[in-house]
Length: 111
Length: 113
Image (cartoon, rainbow over the protein chains, first blue to last red):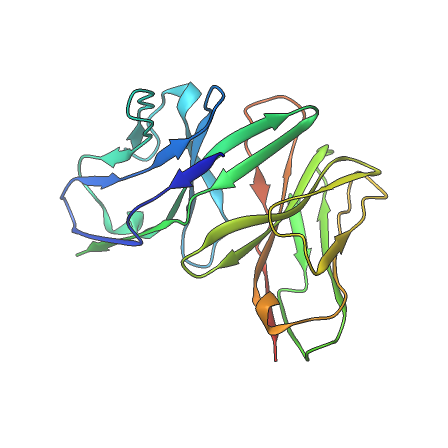
């Protein structure tokens, strides 16, 4: 069965320190993965998608099919990065398109 | 564009009461979704729709119903509210093709007492 695992509920780092938010997945098909972010009092929004191989707000994420991982990384954390982060996996079916989310990791950047 | 609009933002219900959470999008998106967000549990899919007139169950559909009479609207109905339905509910939509990005509403916080 498809599953997205984010092992850390809470991650606290100091400003300027590197950040790595872990995400592991299990899926029998070809995985398509996203990172969504929810800042305080804001709606959930897309941060990154693996197919774009882009860097957004200094964050990057590489899909590692061997380790079935899609960890989110940033070399130097900023206070404004404090938020809830969700890893998500696309499941495509006949005419359907669903996103399965992990339980989320709350990132707290300490000034 | 307003994007995805949810109403109400907050609601308190008594056990056994019924209510409808409204969701509307003005992006002409085919796909629409209802998720619930519980602390420490992430987002779980309740129902989804791939177009007007078509709905299907997600992971946690029990106690809920949906309809999709128009492309724009996707209301979620709670028939007999229970404390276990206390949660934050998010509606989302996605266009056909494209990047696969879901656009979310601001959420509706429901408390059942």
